[in-house]
Each structure stands twice: as C-alpha cells, then as structure tokens.
Length: 146
Image (cartoon, rainbow, N blue to C red):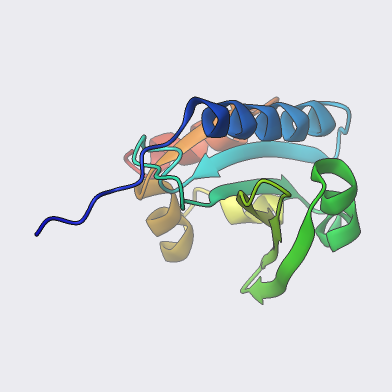
C-alpha cells in the first residue's frame, strides 16, 4: 500500500509567497539585514503540505531574533526559540497551520573563506536567495558549489 503525499494547495503556495514577501519587504527597509535566503524543501521545490518554511536572515543585530519581531510581522504563535551555534531560531505556527522557521544568523554565517561545514550542509540541501543587496549570499552560493 503506497503512502499518499499531501499535495501543496494553491492557497498554501500563496501563503508562503506572502510570508516571503513580508520578510523580504521588512529586510529591504533595514540596512543592517544583509540577506535573506529560503532553505530546505520549499527552496528545492520538494515541499508538502506539512513542510515548514525555513528562512535564514543574515544580520548582526541580535534584537531581530526576539520572537515578538516575527509574531508581530507574520502573526501566529511561537512554538520554539532555540540557538543552534551562531543561528538563533524562532519557530512559529501561523493561524492556517503553516509553520515558519526563522533563523537569525550573523553575517559571518555566510563567510566563504572557508565556508563553515554546517552552513555548507544547509546551503547544499537547497536554497533560494530572496534578498541579497550586497551579494553576500551569491558569494556563499558560489563558494558552496551549489
């Protein structure tokens, strides 16, 4: 018996696009945000209905890792806040059930000389640059061989 994979609905695609548009619009208004990249299943075109949206925001401003920044911007409830090395994660669930995982990382997360092994794994697993005013993420993408 084969397991059925939940198909991503048009409404979910629109919601993900809206979330990305909101985050990119917010980032574009801040000189201290150096980049935004979508990683994981949504970046590589393999998302399912139960897939979360993984977004990494590059900034040296720790204040952007406060959960209230993201609930105020995107709505929803905080599921978890955690630190994974230099990356500070805020995971929230929007009213629709869509889970958004925001990783706020220092700009050094994208250093290319050399590329950190953990960063390389994240980038090589699938990524889509959505805001890169200084080319930091383009350099990382090239240096990671992806």
